[in-house]
Image 1 (cartoon, rainbow over the protein chains, first blue to last red):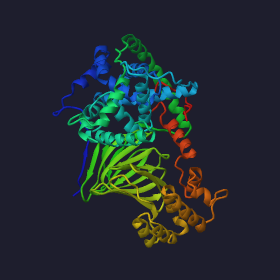
Image 2 (image 1 turned 90 degrees about the vertical axis):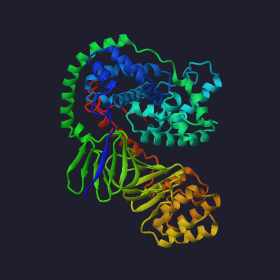
Image 3 (image 1 turned 60 degrees about the vertical axis):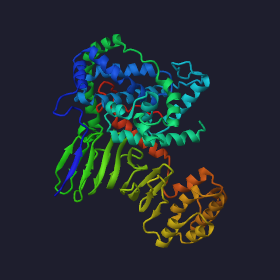
Image 4 (image 1 turned 30 degrees about the horizontal axis):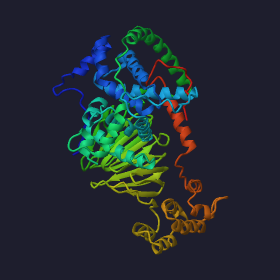
Amino acid sequence: MMSAVVSIPDRTRAGGEQTDEWHLVRAASGGDSDAFASLYTRYRSMVHAIVLAHVRDYDVEDLVQDVFISAYGRLASLRDPGAFGPWLSTIARNCARDHLRERARRNLRLVNADLPEVSTAASQNERRQAVEVLEAIRSLPETYRETLVLRLVEGLTGPEIAARSGLTHGSVRVNLHRGMKLLHQEIERRSLR
Amino acid sequence: MNEDYLWDRSGDPDPEIARLEKLLGPLRGDALPLEMERLSRESRRSGLLVRWGAVAAALLIIVAGTAGWSVSRQQQRWELVSLDSGTRLRTGVERGAEIRTDDSTRLQLRMGLIGEVTIDPSTRLRILRTALRESRIGLDEGTIHARILAPPRLFFVSVPSGEAIDLGCAYSLAVSAGGEAVLRVTAGMVALDGDEGTVYVPRGAEATLSHRGVPGIPRYQDADPRFIEAIDQWSGDRRGLEDLLALARPRDRMTLWHLLRNGSPDQRRLIAERIAELEPLPPGMTVDRLAGGDRETVDRLGEDFGIRPSSRLGSWMRAGWRALTSGPWIERPLRLSGIPRRIAS
């Protein structure tokens, strides 16, 4: 007898109850800006990581704001409130790619002095090293790039990454494992140790 | 690497991961508050734009239909079909889904414009990404047969120690319980990328990927069994290499090309000379340049076998695919021009 098991990640609690986040998204799509501000607090790190994984300049913070503003304007088109995290990820990636295309179109060049600012009083050398490692991460396939930035820059754990991105724990684990291996190789290749 | 620490910071800190966290943490930036004033403006603006967007979307669909191209959400949706009964088991298969077949069930994963994957019995796989710009599944164990319609480097299969990168083709991929992968290509070309290197497998050839991420040397399935045995047993010695080279046919130059890429200078000399013996080298190419390991020359030889690690045509195809399939009628109905956007190189 045929048997195939197909399991889809369940974004609601057992018994069909909707999560707290589901209600926040529904409220925000009805115009509740406070509800949306709560979603911003919850997802800011994820969006920041995705944008940082793509964009090579210091406009990251502006782009993060752009992503959320754009998402707010399009909430009505989100059919499944439980899919807010993955839906927002797509918007963030598209926003980052659009930004890069726009920069290329305007032929804007990044000057060496335009390194991203860091919020602590890190030395110039440490900051430069951080940016070089970030460049190494950006050279990796997109799937690993974003997961690594979420883990190493934003400080999210594997379960937190899974919860926000909609990926299964298994997928995040594989992304982290393979991503770190590739990153080590890239760091060695670039002599960044 | 301390996997527990990497996963959720449990256990003893891994020194390298902790070093990277300390180095990269400052790039987190300041958590600025949401710009509420912009939010209010957006709220007023979006009502008007939805109306204009609907009109513009309708116009674009007319243009696209006239041009003979239509990418509907239906075409994008992935679905799972039983090959035994022909019934559709699930539509809208999304990222995060896991599929497991028992020892007698065959399914087909239909991926819209991307292509289709037949899933053999006793197979476990995961859906990792379903975007038209990059689609990826993870094969944990079992066998799949893929027929891909999308341009090169848009469909990927992750296996325990690497990935198969579609370069425009049809192939079978099997993963054992121990994590070893075996790839057999029936049309086009597939790149098999492991932690320890990448190989290119053309139509009629096969290659393995060990559980440690070491790719085996691709060989044609119709090669002389003694040649195959010689490759598998070669331990890097000169005598073994000479025996192996003596058994190669002209068609086996593809296999020798892979040996050439990774050989020592002495080995490359022997291999290059044999390649030139089996068939004349392309104009302008010499044994000395091949033996010297000149990357451009080696890559150009690969083109003789259809191996183009970074093909310009492939880049153009991907650019065209993305321009046509990431249009506003799929994702963003508010940005419309009816003309494919320029794609940055």
